[in-house]
Structure formats: C-alpha cells, structure tokens
Image (cartoon, rainbow, N blue to C red):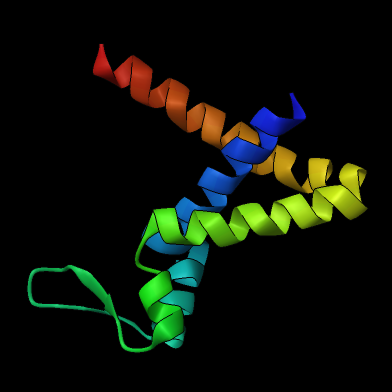
Amino acid sequence: MELLILILATWRLSSLLVSEAGPGDVFARLRHWAGVRYDDVGQPYGINLLARGLVCVWCVSVWIGAGWAVLHYFQPQIAFWLALPLALSAGAIIVNRVIEAQ
C-alpha cells in the first residue's frame, strides 16, 4: 500500500511541477523562475538544464521518485504522511477522469 501511495504522490507532484499553475500560480511562477518559457504555440521549452527537466513529467518523476525513495528509507513515517495528501489528490483526479469518460 505504501508503494502505491508513493507512486501516486510521485505522479501528482510531478504533474504539479510540470503542467499546472497551482494556487496563486505558484507552480507557473516556479517554472518561469527556473527558466521554462513557451513558444508561439504554447509549447514549453527550457532555457537551461533545470528548465529543460521541468518540461517533462517523465523526467521530473525520476527525481521526485528518487527523493521519495531516499526519504522513505531514512524516515518512512514522514515520507508516508507527506505523500498521502498528494496520493489522495491523484486518486481523486483519476476517479474524476473515469467518471467524466463515461
């Protein structure tokens, strides 16, 4: 069960960092600060190494997953409780998408 929670939390945090504005545009501002820009058709691109990593959910998920793994190794309880709200959010999004698809 903990693995599923960490998987969902990894996806949710990766999605927030790469493609969502967030409350008060906090994630959009973070991406802009890191160097993510958008071309004429709205496709993101990075102007530096960090920004190039922030335009790909798959790329970001590797680093987020590594962070969860390290935290879980040293502090499993803290990792679980930090990941749980993100996993619950991911689960709600998945349920919503399944319902809307019907």
